[in-house]
Image (cartoon, rainbow, N blue to C red; front, side, top):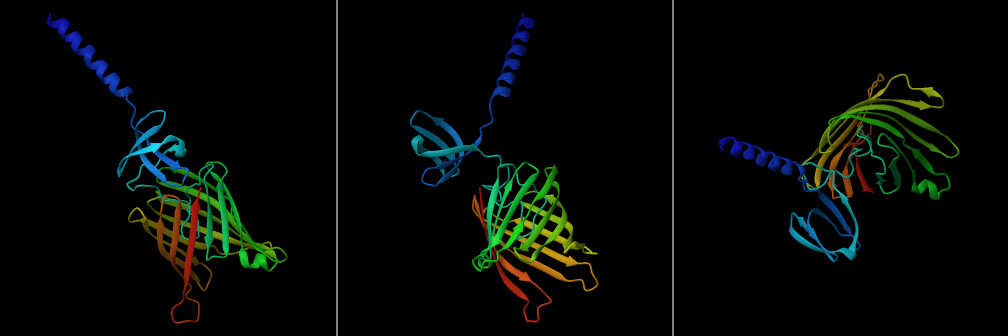
Amino acid sequence: MKKLFLVMLIVSMSCTVSFSQRQEVPKTMIIKMLGGEEYIGEIVSQDNEYLILKSKNGELRLLKTKIQSMQESTYKGQFEFENPNITRYLFGPSAIPLKKGKGYYQNVLVTFNFVNVGITDNISIGGGFEFVSALAGEPIWFLTPKLSHSIDEKNHVGVGVLTAGLSTRGSGTIMYGVYTRGTGEANVTVGAGYGLFDGDVSSTPVLTFSAFKRLTNGLALTSENYIGTSGNGNYFGIHGVRLMSRRNSFDIGGMVIPGLDVTIPVIPYASYVRSF
């Protein structure tokens, strides 16, 4: 009798373990409504007419005919949403890849416009133009392809080029390589770049160091620095704060140019990014 009881107990425990292993972990969903609102949470239940979503603000009863799209959230960080501009600092790039099908529009100082799109999980292509020069009939244009790879969750490497030019006066290119340590919440990047102008490659590189630290859901600090290695050792930097929502980010800060013959060599900097 004891043996029979033991066998039944083992079978019962095995079934319990098997059942628990088959239970699905609740998925966090991002639900976009036709009116533009976005909600994030776990689907509690649904019928033919309504969907019940458990969000941080409690349970929401959403009419299915008003839902535009639903997708699973892959973000696992400590904040409510991921950094919407994960592949770039104030202007310069990190080595974190822009994933396939993802992209963003960036406006810098009102007149500079850029679009970047992930072609694969490791290759992105982008470009842009300056608005005032375009109105004048001689637009300043930009091309910004990048190849990057995530070694693991916190280590990333990348190479790319930044080409800028005028339609009638040629172009110049900066070829760079970068290494990023960290995630979209906090990271540092080091790298180096060489200039290519009129067929000549610069003899010494420009070194770069950038950093990003998220403080709250909607606020982060960020900085990027460039140091010339030629005899005069020129320095250029941009430092500021990032204000964030789920798809938008605003960078506000200043460009530091010590070589300017002014008392405070800082020029205001502002950038807006909309991810898609």
